[in-house]
Structure formats: C-alpha cells, structure tokens
Image 1 (spheres, rainbow, N blue to C red):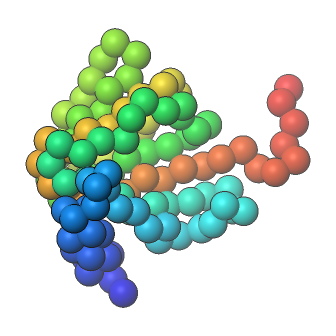
Image 2 (image 1 turned 180 degrees about the horizontal axis):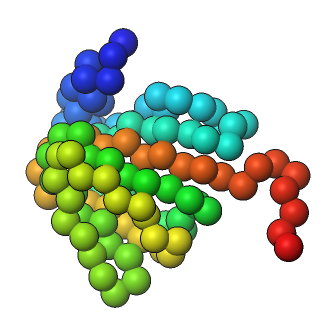
Length: 113
C-alpha cells in the first residue's frame, strides 16, 4: 500500500476512534535505530505531552497541527517539516491531519559518554 492510501486509511480510522488517532509504522521496528510512523489525528485530537527521543522530525502530509514544546509552539501545515526539539512536547490537530514522525533512537548497547 502506498503512503497516500495509508494516510487515507489512517485518517478514516482516526475519525471513528475514541482517542481520535490512528498510527502505523511505515519503516523500521522497535529493534531498529531509524523508525518512521505515520499518524493521523482527527480535528481536536492530540498526542499529550511526552518526552522526545534523541532525534526526531515531524512532516505534515495532510492538514494542520500544532507542536507545543517548552513555552513555545509551532503551527505546521501540509508540506512542513520540523525537527522536534529535544524536550517534552505535545501535538494537536487543528484540522483532520496526517503526519510522519521520523525517530532516530540511541542504538542498543550504546554507552553514554
């Protein structure tokens, strides 16, 4: 299934879900360093405040979302790409929206210096 079809499928699921969201990993797994997840939020849906992975980007495919970090926020529309700041943050849908979250996690066994 292509990305456009996946986006439409997830948006349809988000519109009927109690939590107003749906997601699917489109690349990678829990065991890979790079992971890409497509998320759909119906208007008013949100991902509550959560910690940021080591590195991540958010790319809006459909709609309009607001990313809120430590005392600041960004309104993003289809076509926008932003590096997620390494801080606690949330995402809310201002319209029915689909975005791709790309995460690079610390490799297993990596040691902090």
